[in-house]
Length: 388
Ligand code: TTP
Ligand code: MG
Ligand code: MG
Image (cartoon, rainbow, N blue to C red; front, side, top):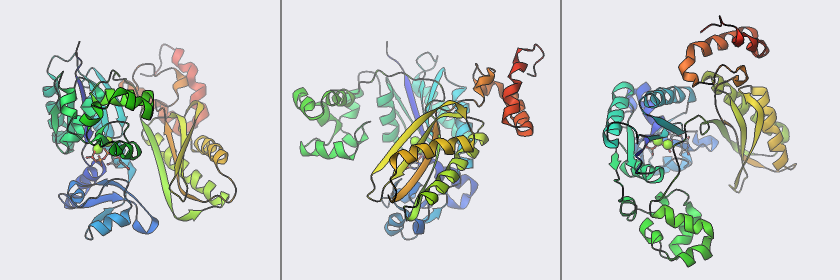
């Protein structure tokens, strides 16, 4: 049976939130970005700024060269998380299944919804704009892969429906870079064979695909034909909180690097607690002066939102990849595998949002008596008169 999958993504998300907080930014060419003096990069570019070729991850200094009058706004993460939560809560409550894949993006499976996919998407798009003044783009398709591409094609304020059977036809004229899993390297290799569009890739002979990339080549061609069997998985696993910093000059002293790891871990811990979530996977990101970037991750024994635990795990990961004297350009710390804090209480087997009153009570106890007190209080759940 055909499925109906929706994908949505907020348009210029950090910029859209900044324009709500400061209406003078509306319609302007501006970016949310780190400072050019400290080798900052662009997090989000407003659509007027994109007319100058400015994109996410571009150094701020380069963005300023492309558009000398560009307004640069410093990122402040708390409001982005809050706006994201509001949007995600609204959507989650309106559909049978939702999988959030980043701060501003999610897949929905509305196969069992009584209304057609296009109507569900249009309704939510209008509702998000009306309630939160945030523009979104939507893709409707028989699978996740095609829905996501449809969202990107329609940006900003888009809504594109790809009916069953039209997947390959829809993808064919688009550049291969719009396909999941095709990075700049694969793109360059494909260009050598004259493959520029997704349709070109879909038409490549199997033996050539296999000799170039092995089984991955076969998978790529299947993607190019718009085939994707993956399902929408509910839960918070895909969410993450991270913080990173690019040094004004490369740093090679262990103490300074360790101090940075600690302050990044503190930032992550604070944001986890603000969102009332804890994570099980600590990640680090290290960029060397030659721009090569590595990530390493480790699983904690139980969910944590504690700065000290995050820092300790991050430091151990870092010490495994660093050698004395080695210079570092960028450091990042992140936490993934997010879910309710204090899962060991066993009170959160149902979706935790449904029980925010209880969660708040637990949080208040924790604030008052500390982490350990709440852990010991787990016996309370067995009492019939527990607070609800
Ligand atoms: P995106 O959805 O990739 O970008 P966007 O919302 O700014 O623009 P659009 O979707 O309309 O193309 O990312 C969501 C937010 O995540 C973005 O607003 C800022 C943040 N982000 C970064 O901080 N660094 C990055 O390199 C990227 C891609 C995003
Ligand atoms: Mg976005
Ligand atoms: Mg996004």
